[in-house]
Amino acid sequence: MKREENELLTQVGKGTPMGEVMRRYWHPICTSAELPTPDCDPLRTRLLGETFVVFRDSHGRVGVIDELCMHRGASMALGRVEDGGIRCIYHGWKFAVDGRIMETPNHEDPRLRQRLKAPCYPVHESAGLVWTYIGPAEHQPPFRRFGFEDVPDANRVVLRINVNANYLQCWEGGTDTSHVTMLHSNVARPNWALGNGKAASGVADDMLVEAFNDTAPKLEIEDTSFGFHYAGIRTAPGEEGSRRNVRIVPIFLPGGRIIPFRDFSTWVFETPQDDEHTSTYMIDASATMPLSRQARLKRSGLIEERFYKDNNFRASWDDRLGQNRDAMRKQQNWTGFSGISQEDAIISTSMGPVYDRTREHLVAADAAIVRLRRRLLDAVRLVEAGKTPPAAMVADMTRMQGFDTDWDITQRWQDIAPEHRMHFALEKEPA
Ligand code: FES
Ligand SMILES: [Fe+2]
Image (cartoon, rainbow, N blue to C red; front, side, top):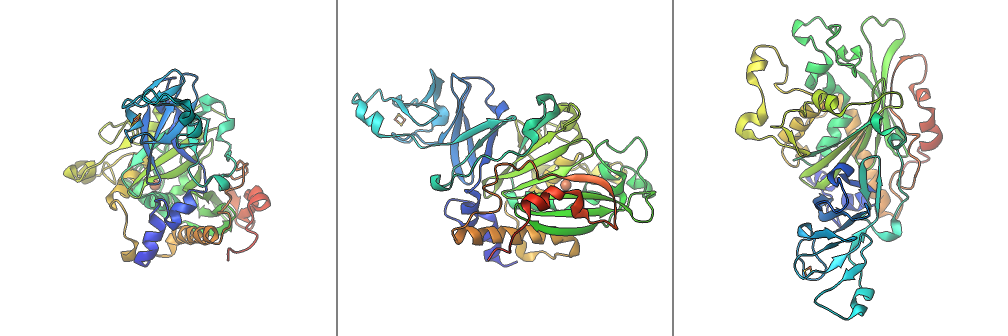
């Protein structure tokens, strides 16, 4: 990859080509849990290289405003949230969630308040997430529903993980199925140290299939209107003839994927804070059973506060990113890390803030990563040509699903996800 292409794909600030693509979608800006009560402390947070203040007013409504006060630029993150708005502590100007100027104590003439409006953004709060749209008003798309909103609250776990790395290396990691058997050996192949290639019964986590012992999954990829989907095809122990395990994973703009499990799915949104920081939002939702946040944190390796606290994932080279070399030497732990999310966040961090793709050596197993980059470049071209980026206008995204299932290779894997063909077929190649 050329340096210019790497920059094109990784830079998301206002006015950059990828930044303009990203600004055509709604993004999560925080979790509802970060604004727990009316008039709670405001949140200062970044999205696509810009800084915003998010607050919940006395009525429980959420507002997203530019960080710096429109009067003379004090940070509204220091503001007082009271009586239906947020008040700047510098001269006391007060704003409502819709940008209305409620009070200007140092300026009596009310015409100023009527004439001006504070820079604020549309907000949609549902299923434990606060979403906003910061792109051009004339292109504001409908809010998109994904399906995790529809399950009972007890059947859903929402996580935000702030990682010190560019969004694309996080997203490429999530698109790359071949690392699972290696990086996540501790969970995916729990008796790797025995070298017998079989999952020890009772050791494998409930979310994993024995098929992960197949270290060379076949990969088939097809473009869709949301991006693409791929089938990771694995032979499970004891499977014979034409039976295989297949995992169909949708990869969708901007930053999304669905990880399928047997009893639930995880929707992931790799949301750029800026070029060097990403908020990974993960929503586990099950149609059939309650899910436990504690169990999820434990399974993901996020229970350890030295790595994960207040939504922030932290690791430093002072102690080799926290790697446990002793456990590796004793063959107790393959990576010296534990838990899938911990391992993924460590790898993204280890690549540096913005990974330099000019030096890599891709192989056939990296086909989905190549496809992701190509589809992102397609999206840049679409927006530059004045067109709509992939599936930005589709309000009902619930028909996009992931599957983890047994399957017969004499059938078409696309038929496991017929709704993708019906609703997300790629009509024609982008120009
Ligand atoms: S800077 Fe905010 S009121 Fe003056
Ligand atoms: Fe991973």
